[in-house]
Length: 114
Length: 113
Image 1 (cartoon, rainbow over the protein chains, first blue to last red):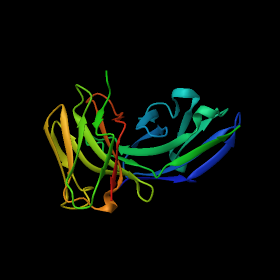
Image 2 (cartoon, rainbow over the protein chains, first blue to last red):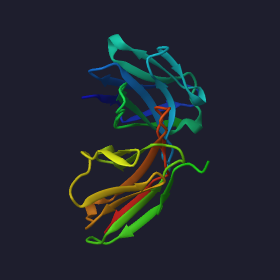
Image 3 (cartoon, chains in turn orange, cyan):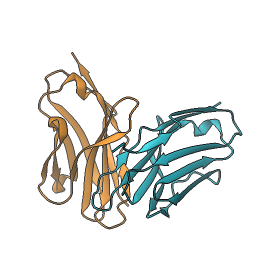
Image 4 (cartoon, each protein chain N blue to C red):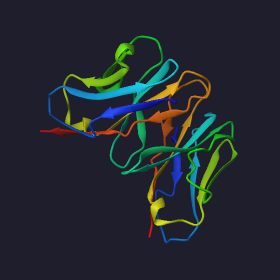
């Protein structure tokens, strides 16, 4: 069975500060890993994904994440937070097989303080 | 492309009533997912279709819930009878064969009184 754990249901940062959202995964097979973002009253949209190519993955809006197998982590970072980054962020994992059922974490709400 | 379309966007009903949620996936996508999102339980996968065939319905909470996908361009999620604990936002997502990315609809906010 695969799962993800997101540390911190709420994170607050000042505008311009580093954003770090933590995600650890558990998977019995090489995983595919994703970060999705959900803005208020909207569905989720993909920020970035890791599918066994480069371990440092760049996504939209200046976000990136690094796959670290030794730490079973896939933390999401952004060097400088913008007010528009305020949203809920979900880490997700799927196996690399054809079934590709995706398991989502519980989400982290990011607050950006002016 | 219009994206994944869900209707209605908001539904308020009374306990015991039947509720039908609708989803139109993105044209050409062969996988469709129904999710439920609540504060307490987060985002839960209810059921997953591949080429209109249900693959995994282990997330469907109980027999009151049923889902169908009669063709590649339409799916329904039905709750009968509805209960207050079914109040949640229900999302539909679709995925093309050639990608790992799921495309989510805007959701249906269901309130059961």
